[in-house]
Image 1: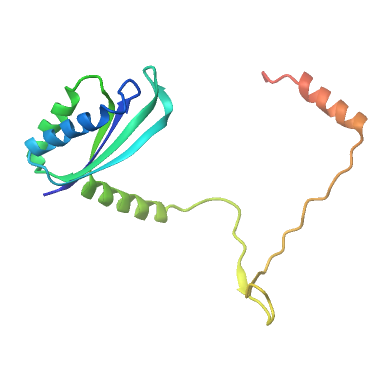
Image 2: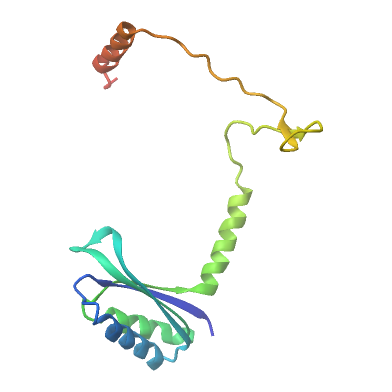
Length: 165
C-alpha cells in the first residue's frame, strides 16, 4: 500500500479545545477508508505566510498513513466536504513525491550553469593553513575618491535622467 501524507490547516476561528475533536474526526475518516499505520503530528498554531480569507493564524496538523489507492479519492472528497473549519489541506503520495524529487535532482545536476569561471584550486606549499590555495588571485577594484560637489552633481543627473527612453 502506498504511503500518503495529509497536511491540513485549521483556521483561527477554531478554538484550541476544538482541535482534538476535529483531529479525531479526520482520523475516523481515514480509518473508515481503510488507512493503516496512521501517525498524527500536531505542529501547533503558527502565523500564515499570507492571509487566507481573513485568517492570519492557523493550527497545522500532519497525518501520515498508508491507504489503498482506490480509496484515496473518497477520503479526499470527505475532507473537502467538511465545514469551513479546514482552511487548506493537501494529500501527497510520498513514494511519488520522493521519485519526483530524485528526478529533479538528477535533471538539475545536468544543467550547465553559466557565470564567471570558478577559481581552480591547486595544492599549496607546506605550512598552508587550508592545504589549498587559489591559483588565480582577484584584485580588489580601485577606490575612486569623489568630493561632495561631484557626488551631488551625479545624483542630480541621475534624478533628472529621462527613464522613458
